[in-house]
Length: 129
Image 1 (cartoon, one colour):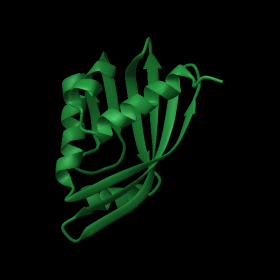
Image 2 (cartoon, rainbow, N blue to C red):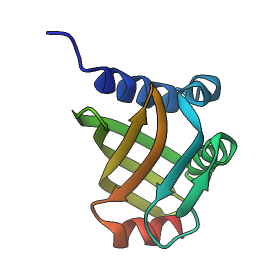
Image 3 (cartoon, helix red, strand yellow):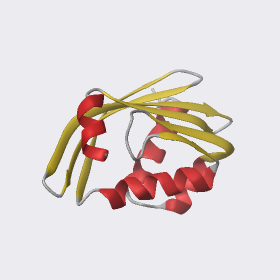
Image 4 (tube, helix red, strand yellow):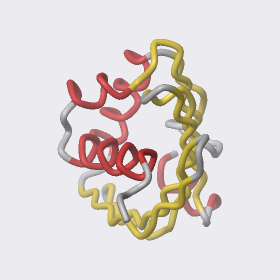
């Protein structure tokens, strides 16, 4: 049985972000894309448009001294996908180990909305502040 197109899309987006391939990421974003990063910290908020989303993703990588992610699972339907992943990060003496949910709304092969939520938002807020 072939993969669902939204599973393939979520995997392609995940791979492009993980590899730091901004050109590939940009190609997956709709012009009207909105990325919402949950929490109350320096990197939380809404980022509208491909340039703002790419800038946000770059700042996440720059803010941590060490950062690794592990894709755990992808759940899909005809409107989008939910990606579950583990994040490990270090910044100075701070460490963060958490799981996150990344909800993707996909329309006509492009990401139109993303929403990331940490399972441990208190720890995430402390780390990224």
